[in-house]
Image (cartoon, rainbow, N blue to C red; front, side, top):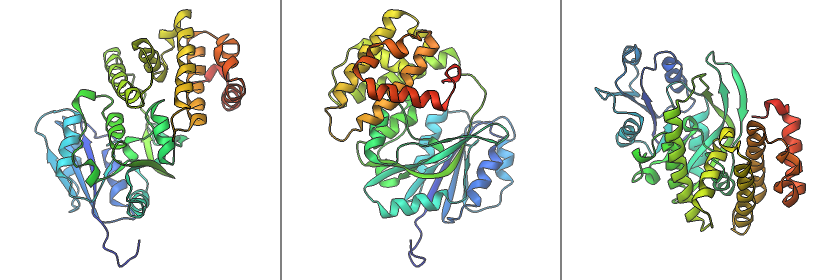
Length: 340
């Protein structure tokens, strides 16, 4: 981008709730960005810790602080942030994550040069509570592979996403899909524009050792199932309610669900039918989908105790070369006991 070209305003959206532990690090990562034309919209959603005091300790005109006055929940808070944004581009960051210094600049450069894209994410690092890097995560870097990946699950880190305001203007996070509201929104954005990830590590995503409750797990399963049903219908796939259930639990790596031999065989049959159908749809990367699905299948076989299905099942017979290659790659990268 030329130095003489006015820099478009970027609105960075962050909702906060009892975020005192990591909030300062998240805000500081935005204030030191190499791209300076920012507004940072902070929505406090009824915090009861030192969150408000931390925000008020800053004296930077780019910070725009809004207080809900009560806890409205993350979906309503994120939608409020969207309505307050003035930027040509909207970047998202969770209050415990970190944007690396060139994140906003690289994403703006890409979006300015590629108006057909309504959304882009980035590669990212996962970090632990102390901020130590745990692993590198790479997601698809073109539109076709991103859409293909959606069949096997979300491929955008919320804290790495930049949106074009003109695309998101009439789209909001849906309360009907809470716990999977970001995946739902990315899928709907893909109906209006191209999507991809920039192949640069520009975000740090913090992993917490907190377990999702059984109630939330069931609710999340329900939301993902709804998204996949809409996706399958949009692709004109042939599937049953049982297929949809099998696929959703496959995405969730729910080994317990597949301990029954009949279910693991039904899953194998569904995978065969799914891949055969996707193979006939132009624009989808069947080799990528095979790799993603086979890896999930291997995890399920190990978690459910069906080790014999790894090499003696229907997938080995139907997709021998591609399947065995995926198994070999997985075994090379990780010990089978730690396959997940």
